[in-house]
Length: 165
Image 1 (tube, rainbow, N blue to C red):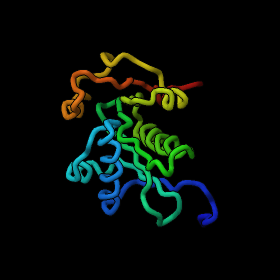
Image 2 (cartoon, one colour):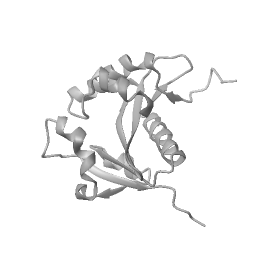
Image 3 (cartoon, helix red, strand yellow):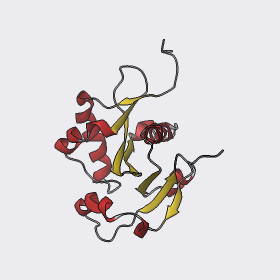
């Protein structure tokens, strides 16, 4: 059923067998100071929140993105990383869209992100917000960051599930 000649990415929920590769990808970007490092145990504990990208069925994982649930109406797009060899092809957008689809399915009203690439998220409809608008609960991960409390990331928010009728 899947067109083997298609250049379309394959995005699925992560499975346990993906986690070691996800760990390597995330830590490549963490070493550059672009996102928080994640331990293997943390990734296994949060397995259900991650989506992975493959360029073809059965292929290697070459990208990852997570949707962390923060509160009854709030989630976070986190750990978005695409191997450099696969960047610039719209794969990051596809991963974020998968997370947003899940947020809609879960009937969450708002999704935020903290990023060094605000333009990417603005193109997807996110709006820059002041970090003070985010609940204190979300800062738990930030305590692990070497830049805390002087965060230099941009906070953005996207409103979901708003009736347009």
